Length: 463
Image 1: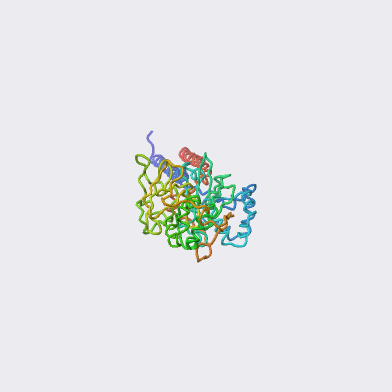
Image 2: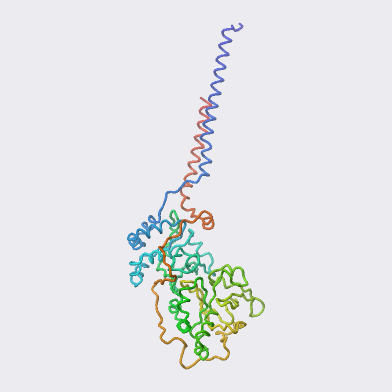
């Protein structure tokens, strides 16, 4: 029986309605899919901010080790705020035992009454860049010299901030400050939003003036010679970024007959031949040395050894414009004919290295004799005298307690450097550990969103 016109019309209408319903469901499912599914990959690539952990939180969490530091900083809210506001830094936190030894010294009284000194002292315990312990001691044979935040006028005359010397031996990282004061890391890698904290077992010591640093090292003849020549004050207060090759007492003693009879001008010339001030118009043969401000031992290793016991010398220029020649032979550093016997003693305006012979500006061609335990003097006609070591009469050896002396005539209010900009952060990446846990959780959230998107799509298609 053929369908009537009414039945045909009703059938077409129902078919169209069914098609429209399917289209609506497909479009709705597609919209839901497009909304929900992209959230999954987006959650995987959009970093999720970790909960902020402040420096105060980290220090407070280490009550058993840092309670003394917490109590101390609680009495200094301005200093604490400055330290907390410095972004992307490594902070060396003195332990309770370290602060106990500091409190027992006269230096503690100075910190109590001098906020500027306290700010400088704490700034010396921090340096730019959030460095985990593994990256601090990344080379066991070569020390590192990071610049700290102590770049405050009146307490440091080293461009870029006073440094620390970092040594690594058998996996133990030690930090050497002024007067050779040494601290080791007790607890490492306490990350916070803005940097990382390492707890150290001894207080650091701010490097002192050159004369005080030399006395602490027992180099009384060098200080006495500076006084005789009238250059002690100028060397300590007017000069920045110095590298000094300081002869030990025996070096002065073996040429006592000659050097003890020099005029102040002659003695000043000899002493000036031991001082280097790099940068600017320095005529050193190596561009890497010309661009350096202070020459630590790592900068004095450019002389490439050649056949025999000689090496290709590295020329550096003294403050007087005369030449010195640095050689490295069998791993030892020589300056002209003198052997460097102690390296990298930090002082307020640079560094000094102890040598075993007094340099002679009239004998710049003197060469080392590495086969000898002690290098012969560069003054062939000189000899020691019965009177003992020259220039030492009345010179008293002092023991530093971490005190600091003003090096510059202007002492403005101290400021901690501002947060490191993005370009500098690239060189010292922010610790990824701060966001790791939250990013791991986002994997499961991503899977859940994907399942939800597919489920909604199937439901709408099947209903």
